[in-house]
Image (cartoon, rainbow, N blue to C red; front, side, top):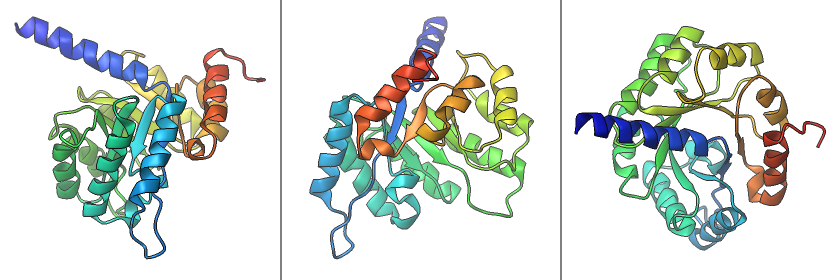
Length: 243
């Protein structure tokens, strides 16, 4: 039974890794004139992105005003997005800020319709590189669903990044710096079945990221015209850099 459970767990993670090599579309959070969330418009935006065939919906990521929303608003946005998605795309819900807050939201996310979590990198400028790595790992060990680590700065060493990448519950790294040498080193130290290295700098950086081994990319442009993002992804997957 243990062997079967381990095999099923590994198969599930490899399937998740494969699906993350598509587009991770980060929906915006629309507001009303009084500053409250425009729930009806939010549903329409997510429905449009899902209907277009975007592979993963990222809810309450940076593009969705994560650091401007209260914890209660983040949960509301994510629940509304999951409802509008209706199971068509993978549902990735973002967590972050304090470790306690991130773990608490992460534990409830599955119930709210999340397939996996996106962990924002800590904003604390005084946090040591090792402490930042421990932050990702601490959340990954406290939740029931797979996670993607969002790395936005170069403060962590390659050994810290690889420590995150090799955690059994971390299925992807959203790599969002322009240090392609560091990315190439990370890709070369891992296998495609271990982790998805995702371009975290959207369409404009997707081609150079692909050239060093990343797959898939994040996108805020899907809020405008998802068909263009899908065409870019198809060209990259075909190795057609000119297109």
